[in-house]
Image (cartoon, rainbow, N blue to C red; front, side, top):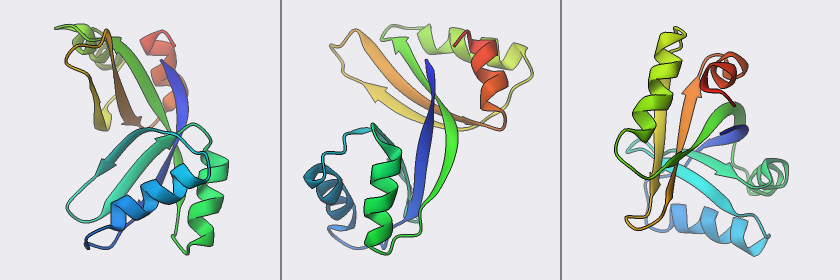
Length: 127
């Protein structure tokens, strides 16, 4: 578990919009660790180098904002995420949104959690 920086931008609802962002980041050596895209075009990205990625996307005229989020690396087993979320709930921390996933055969999964106070949440989750 760690505190990471999430990049947020809006994409047009058109074929290839997401592929274009992924391609330009890949072409510039940026690895995407997690992403979420909703039906309104809101794209959330956690990457290995958020400063470089934000600069690249800004050069392409995307309005990019950033916020701190929790990156929760959990065992890929029933109840693993529940244990971490219970720690947050017991500390009175609300999860505003979350996204993530794991392989059906991999030993771990990654979940991104957006919370109001990442430092407090990280302490509660034992980060």
